[in-house]
Length: 114
Length: 111
Image 1 (tube, rainbow over the protein chains, first blue to last red):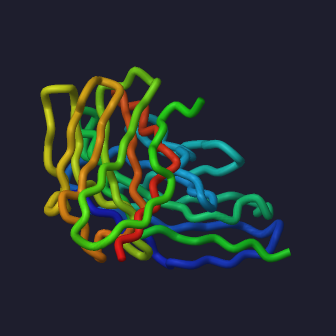
Image 2 (image 1 turned 180 degrees about the vertical axis):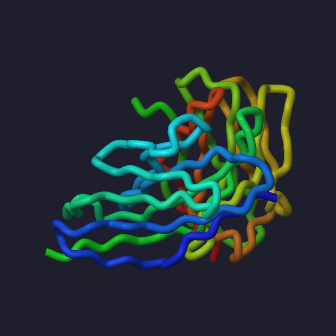
């Protein structure tokens, strides 16, 4: 079964600092990988996705993620945090283009300090 | 109007009661899903449907049932609610490799 591990349930960063959220997956085949963001009292919104094209994926709101097969990782970064980035972030994986049952990580809550 | 609409947004119910959560979509997507979110556990798949005649159990289907009344409607039922079903429930849709569209969630409390 597919699984993802998000390292760190809470991350606190200063405004303007680098945001780094870690995600590792377990998979015997190249997966499809996603990052979602959940703002308070809202549903999940897609930030970006990796579907076996470019390994560096750019998403919305200045976020990007790099797929590293050798490390089975798909870490999410943003060079400069903004107060509006405070939210919960989920990494998710699905096995293939024909299998859309997403497996989610436990989530990482980001707090941005002024 | 939202692409994926869930009703109700919040619900408090008593142990043993039957409750239905409803989901409707205007995306025209063929695939629909029900997930529950618990703190520290992320989202877990309850049921999914790839079309009106195709219903499948997810990883935590015990205690739940679903109905796909039309391409646009997918409801989740708790036949006899219990307190550990207290959670945030999300409906989602997908089409091809485009990723998911999530509803805003239903916060269910079973007392």
